[in-house]
Structure formats: structure tokens, C-alpha cells
Image 1: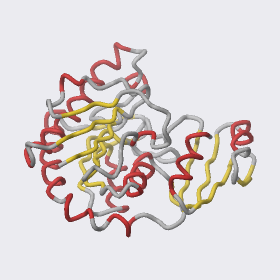
Image 2 (image 1 turned 135 degrees about the vertical axis):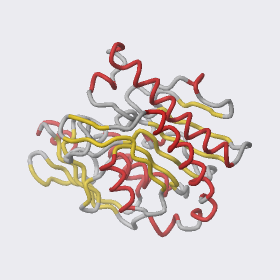
Image 3 (image 1 turned 135 degrees about the horizontal axis):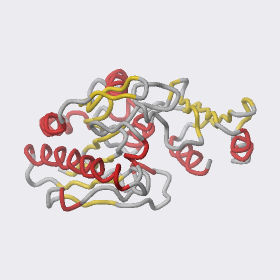
Length: 269
């Protein structure tokens, strides 16, 4: 079985402050980069519990893309580091050859609570909407997986996001790693989270073959999107993208039927 894992950090067990996500702040960051790596390792181990002959590609999808310690992962893993610039972004290297995709360390979207570090992709955006839904990095990655014909079978991250995941696609097995309230978080012991991740991954992979046939019906047929920029100057620049439309001084719309066209637009704005 061939599995794709996209790993972020802001939904990792216990993470609470931006310094803990920043490799330029090693005193705060180092422990959480290790915790991120161990959570990915637990998921990989769960996949291997179900299929010891599996092939796993991990996309380090946070920030610089240089956070995960490959030495902490099982030997049947490949690790993609940094970013090529492809519109797949956090799902870069995914293609139709994969049997399933998994997300770890994902977090609540910008314009919501549920995580002190809630955001969507970049601090330049205050809100991203796709078909009138507040778009999280989960939703963008989920649609990317569906676009390539790959079922998403598992997601892990903060509790508020996992509620969104369950509402979006009940077939996805979820693990909440922590809950946020204001600028605080509450988390179980990291070892307990890793045990749940391992068991959930084993359960999720068992569903992969069954879910392969459901992919086409889950991807919307068209995409009406708008992005609200924090600075009106950035919105003015985005308006120069072919097909972009003015909504207000801070907000730009873009509509398409091919999801990849949205990804291409999103990559350049």
C-alpha cells in the first residue's frame, strides 16, 4: 500500500505559541519539532501495523518544510523537505499512484478560534472562503487529494478542526491532539496522543480500498472562492491575476470549475 502523509505543526499536541513553530527560535521550537516528528512516526507505525510492506511518503508541510527528523521515522518512509513551488503546496508530491492520504498536525482556519495559532496558509490572509465555507488548510489539502483521485482516510490536529473534518467527510478517521481556548491550549500526555494516532492510522488504512471508489463524488464540480487580505495593497496586486474579480478593497474573488486552477491562483496571490 502506498500512503501519502502531509505533516504540519500548529496542530501538534501541546503547541501554543508562534515561537514554538519557528526554527529561528530553537529554545522554544526544538521540542515541538521533535514532537511533530514523533506524531508522524506514530502514524507511520500504525500504517505498518496493517501493512508491513507499505510505502510511505511524508511531506514536511510546515513553514520552511525542514522540521521533521527522518531518523525518527520508520525505514520504509521517504521524506520530502522544503517546497518546490508547485501549486499542490502542502500536498506536493501527491499523485494518483497513492492509495490514500493522511494529515497530521493540522489546525483551525483563519477567522476562527479553536487554536491560538489558527490561520490559513499565510498571515497575508484574514479569511479564505471556498463555496461559502471558511477554508482551512485541511479543506484545501482535502480537495487536492480528491482532485488526484486519492481518498483522504485520516486527519489529526486540534479538536475544533477535527469537528470540521467530521462534518466535511465522516469517512475520515480523526484524532484530536489538543483543544484551544483563547490563547491557551489543553492537551493529553503526548504519549497517549501518539498511541491514539497509531491505532487510528491502522484503522484508517483498513478503509482505504473501500473509499477509493467514493472519491469522485466528494469533489465539488465548481469553486466560488474569495480571499480577504489583511492589507488592501495585497488585494490590489491579486486583482491582476487573470479571472480575479473585485469584491471590496480587501477582498478578491476567483471562480473556476477545475480545482487545479484555484490552486494555481492561490499559489500566485
